[in-house]
Image 1 (cartoon, helix red, strand yellow):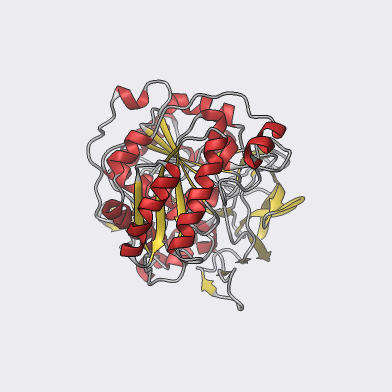
Image 2: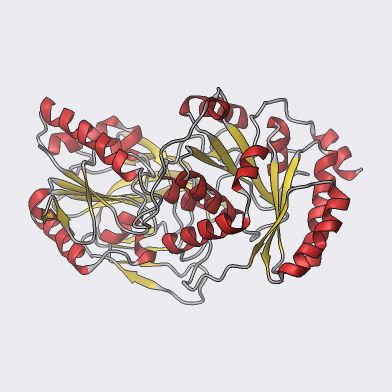
Length: 501
């Protein structure tokens, strides 16, 4: 039987994509598979994306095994953060005045530095390797989802991606997105979904392994067992087990229920709350879908880390020319996935972009067009608790005029619970909303408490779960979610009139 390993350490995303349903065994930090050293037992290794470099979660014993797998001529496929692990080093200091360099294994002679990419992409194969043999000149599809995507060095290129945007700016060009070692048995790639969306790459791996029909069937069967095993845990090495699925017809009849987490501005804690809510629902046995308004799908990576669901083609809801799929198509696509509930994370403020004549260009318009209830978050860390209360009341007033259902209000990053509770009477008198709650300011000791910087997924995610479970009524949020009903987008002039009235 052919055995293909999947690296399974803190900070990795083993279910972010299915890797062509090839992995058959998980490889942890002890470097062992079936009680034997990995380099003796495995025929190849897949290293997924995530925050492996930032988390510094790969220990010396495992590093030794990875190097031995490479030296024996077996294949290694590194995706995104897995690619960075195989490289020389990665500068993760995107918001630091100086470089913060994390060393890799040095198997691939390249280094990484900050460059954000979140496009759906088409990439061209430009050289042979175990992955790309006889495919030079062919195009593949997938998506970028990285913060440190600038690649420099001397390793032989195998892939270049045609991108539209980087670092939040329209800048169409061709970028290096994949390299190989000299022998061609180790490849690092930045194009997520490359194996899932391009069967020719999977066929090349099977050919490299000299797989016959019975080998292929065995791989598929063992992959299904592996996926079932992985999905029984929330996150990785958290000790949090998933309860038996409690789905019922009231949640998955045609459309699942949906709720949007939106806010009064950026840095409000939308990602933190979305992540914690997703993790708690997963723990309870719900199948949860997580979507993002706009192109920055990095924001829902922590949720997918806990949730063990893959990034889908419909995970990014298009606003203007930004993002992956139009709302109507997204709603059509989610029908067949048997989600119990979907959480949509908004972009910036709920109103950011609403006065742009491109329709839709804001979270508010997405909520309006599909009758999705909105849970509004207002942060208290900048202007204070009273300002947060005034902000949320003003936002809900405008949302009411636009016909948006504000289902509840969360005061986030609260530094004094008594003051926050004293504002609830004011908020209720101004909005009529009954679901009012607070979340205290959470101290995360490790550097990086948001996906934008050097995040350690396990710390961020477990703090989010713990906080949401303690402070939010998850059962009530389930009740507030509703099935969507798509309608035409409101015309720009009508939005302007209602918003300004």
